[in-house]
Image (tube, rainbow, N blue to C red; front, side):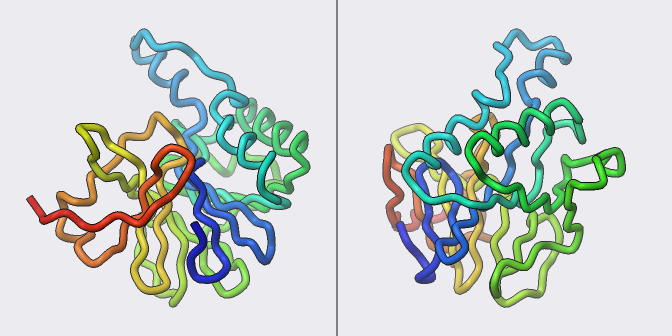
Length: 210
């Protein structure tokens, strides 16, 4: 689905700025399974390649030349091995990593290599400001993550995009991230919903608040 005449919303849970062929992902949470295992949970481990499978799939179909992460690249703070695997994957896809807008999970970034760009105040892409979303922002046109928006459909939570005016909230890219039911909280009352349904993204009418 295309919105604002320049953004493509993908069922792979991220958006592409078509004029620049730049993908914007939020809430990737690399290392989630390993973090759960360290806590004693019996869940299977997954490689970065497995966690990024949706990006790999989308890159086969759509032109993606660059990528920005709008916060929470890591689950439990900076991890050099995870970053290296992530960069190698992007290199194999011929996608340039523009950099990271740090989120509340991205602790320890002073330990990141000097050539990794970190945009603490957000990243300007054309006339859009890309932020994480855990702090207020005064830009007129914003792309953000953080909230993990979802709707409940047939008893299951389905990730969704949210739009109000020229503000767009991305769903969590990670399939492990718990979705927040946007029909429950009044704060999302005026936002349009675009739900991921199989291989498409579709506009969904707002349910009555419970």
